[in-house]
Length: 194
Image 1 (cartoon, rainbow, N blue to C red):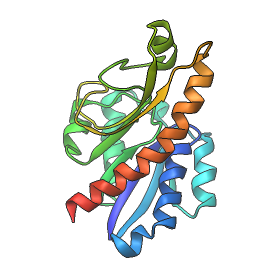
Image 2 (image 1 turned 135 degrees about the vertical axis):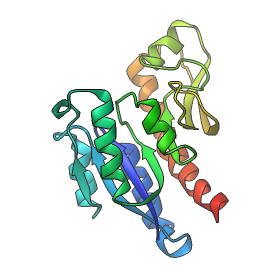
Image 3 (image 1 turned 60 degrees about the horizontal axis):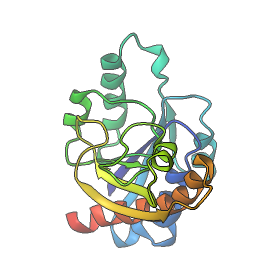
Image 4 (image 1 turned 90 degrees about the vertical axis):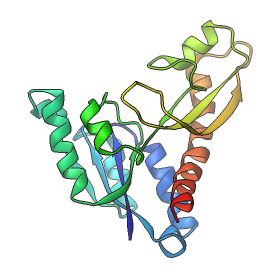
């Protein structure tokens, strides 16, 4: 069995979209792929309950319990590695990862970012796109590298920026596309590896 470990910090909507696609498309039977664990750095992340409701094992490793980013990432690697993942998926995991962590999972660590990378790396992407006068915005699934929001593009979705758009309205439209492209990119990762 090929294992996926999904890391979350919040609502887990992208995690849930991946889990729904895996179930609906029969990834376990057709690809030998399953979500082995959902790990959160926040004990109160709503996505944990969502994962449990969908029958996925959950674990919590609070980052505030560690003295440094390095110590947390070392403990997180040990927690993830217990599941022998072929792929580690960042799904709203709001931590900047250390170079050692990224190197440990090189080639099998992916993220989704709410912009059309390389534009608008970092935070506040939707407001920045509106302020820049962009006519389109979107989301990007990418390989994770030591450089924030860089790495090979695996999938993108484009949405229009509408007149009078707010960051919240644009974010909601982008999120619906994230829920479509992230599961497709995860599936494609395993299809390429087959």
